[in-house]
Image 1 (spheres, rainbow, N blue to C red):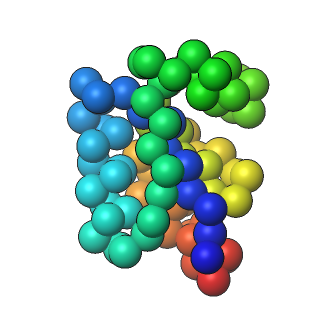
Image 2: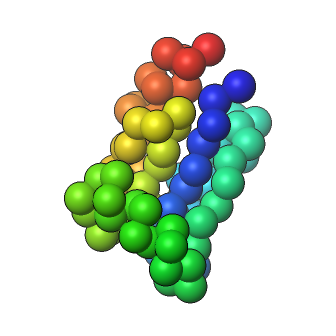
Amino acid sequence: MAKVIIYSTPMCPYCRMVKDFLRKKGVEFEDKDVSIDRGAAKDMIKKSGQVGVPQVEINGKIILGFDRKAIEEELENIG
């Protein structure tokens, strides 16, 4: 099973969309709220070089934004 982390904020509509999308697909994920978790925010920026959310990490690969196609492809590649 793929390890999936969502870096998000509560006010971000695309963050909610990506989480709803993953729930509908039955994908378990860890949600890191970067608005209150400074450590998670630093990790996110270190990994991607970006400050925008959502960022989806699937087994170490970062996908910026709610890129449905990229997320589905990465989940398929993991198996």
